[in-house]
Amino acid sequence: MNDPTDRGESVDIERVKGFYNTEEIWDPKDKWHSYTKTAIQLFIDNFFKRVINGQRMNILNAGSAGNNYGLLNHEQLHVDIADKKLKDIPNSMVANIEKLPLSKKEFDLCLCVGSVINYCDAFKALGEFSRLVKKDGWLILEFENSRCFEYVFQPGFGQEAVIVETFYKGSKERLWAYSEGYIKRILRHYGFRIISMERFHILSSLVYQISKKPNFSALFSSIDPVLKRIPFLNLFCSNIILVCEKMV
Image 1 (cartoon, rainbow, N blue to C red):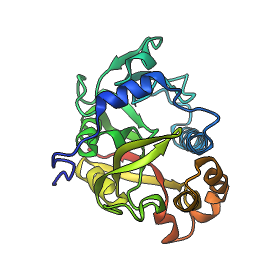
Image 2: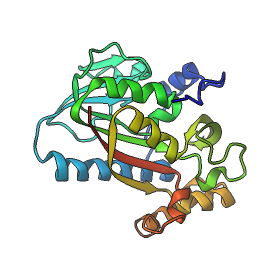
Image 3: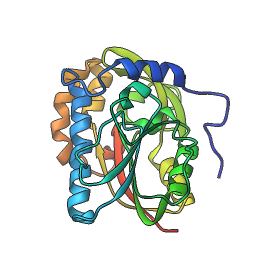
Image 4: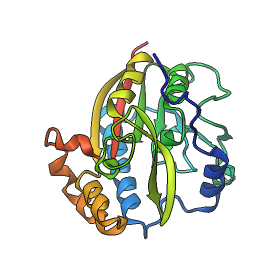
């Protein structure tokens, strides 16, 4: 399988590291990303309630920034490039998720949310997750979608992998955006089967394209529970989160 990120373009990881070392990741004043956090947390909570049902898991928390997502009854290894976010986390490792110094098949579940994979080569990172997650284990992955309304007038809209300019807490941000189809193909390539998926920031993405006001646009995310059930329209969401089972 070809890796479309392997063409000389890249995200400045040192800049990302410096930025996230000094910023509060989920600022409550940032309504757009506060909603993102809420949507991710609800998805994780529902998965653990429906599927895990009290089993104790060994979790790779990839790009955690020290956030345990309320999974206090499970063993977690926190991994991040932002070393200052991990300084008070006892079971942690400063590393790039594209190449992790860990033994294969160590984990029952890998958690990679907060658009962490959009700062990475998704093909390499998902290859590492496949190597480290046990057969019949799980992956929870969230990413930003290249087909969302926000990028309609940007070059590369809907491409498999493209560096885009977006926003974060009043600043411009460069990251990789990935198409839903591309991520699904990588997951199949590495032996993952998609079990469930949610799309969010649908109408809010369109409103942002028009208004360029993140907090105002975030108000429209309340309609996501309805819009995510509408075929075709939901494909233009900003964010996608899914659960996969490792089959091999």
